[in-house]
Amino acid sequence: AQWGNGDKADAKKSYQKYVELMKSQGKDLKKIPQRVYDRIVLNERKIECAIDDFVGEWYYENYRNNEIYETFSLCLLKSNDNKIKGRFCSISRGGNKIDCSTDETDYNIEGLFLQDTLSLAFRSFYDSKGKGTVQICMKEKGKSIFWNIIDYQGDIYLPQEIVLTKIDKKVIIHNQDELDIE
Image 1: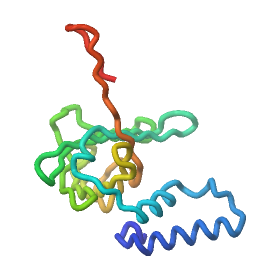
Image 2 (image 1 turned 45 degrees about the vertical axis):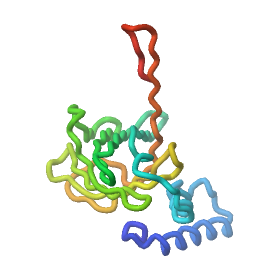
Image 3 (image 1 turned 90 degrees about the horizontal axis):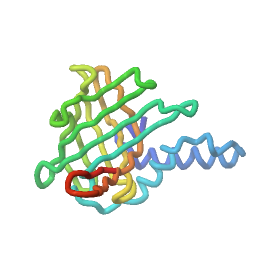
């Protein structure tokens, strides 16, 4: 609740206390969700970044029983000095819930870059009433970002908090008529 309400300093203290208690009681530390460590680290260090560091393609996938259960891709474009627009595609529940558009020009996320964070409003392709706000901050410059939905309404099938990895696309030209994008 503290993290979701924007009280990140108190949330960090609570997460640290949680980890300390788990250690002192000899509990299995592997059961601590990765987001706990991510939030402690994200609060400790601000990564200097510019709006251009967020531009690009980002991806996340989650497995259950050795099968892909959820994928999320995010494309972010700079629309002017401190504004971003983009689109996402979320496939969840083993492919039973899809929140995507087949139109690559249908942008459903936009907002501002403020200091080191993107504050964006989004709308769902799944539910016409689905919308919300998300904050995105740099986790590792040029490699990963942290996605955190702050609030929403309607039916959405998006991950609440995840770390997305940047997709590096390489263009290989074989000859004048053939090229591959990896």
